[in-house]
Structure formats: structure tokens, C-alpha cells
Length: 118
Image (cartoon, rainbow, N blue to C red; front, side, top):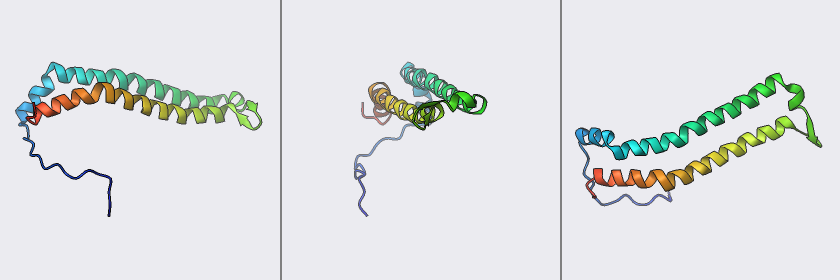
């Protein structure tokens, strides 16, 4: 069975001790990584949940508005429903770019130091 996964690395990595993990967890560099993640993920999560709940509430309590036809048989509820999917994909794409630019380099630097590479 063929897979696209790369072959396992032949390099031996040193496993950090529990004390080293605790030390890194307390470091300013790790704190910055955690802040960078949280400052992106938490506001977007709250905004998306609010957007989703707005959709649900409008669907339940504003049937007249949601049933308003925009063109042909396409109504507001259908457009909002599609917008939910579009929003999900945009957030995933945006997070991927954010992680690649801001989170992954910091995490890789910490990982390489922990494994004895630097």
C-alpha cells in the first residue's frame, strides 16, 4: 500500500526531561507563542459562534425575514446558510496562513532546542 507520508527519520532525537518541559512552559518564548495563538483563535471562535447563533436564532424567530426571496427561489436563509460554509473555509484558510507565518516558526525553534538541535 503506497502512502504519501515521508519515510521515518533516521536521526535520533533526545527526549527532554519533565523538568525541561516545565522550564520551557514557563519561558517567555513559550508564553509569546501561546499568546499569539490565543489572540488569534479566541476572538475568531467567539465571532464565529456568535455568527452561527445569529443564524439559528433568525431561523427560529425571524421566519418572515429568513424566507424573504432575494432572486428566484433563493431566500435569505439559503444565502446565510451558504455564508456559514464560506465563513468556515475562510477562517480555516486564514488560520493556516497565521500559523505558518507566526506560530510554526516559534514552535519549531522551541522544538529544535528541546530536542538538542540548537
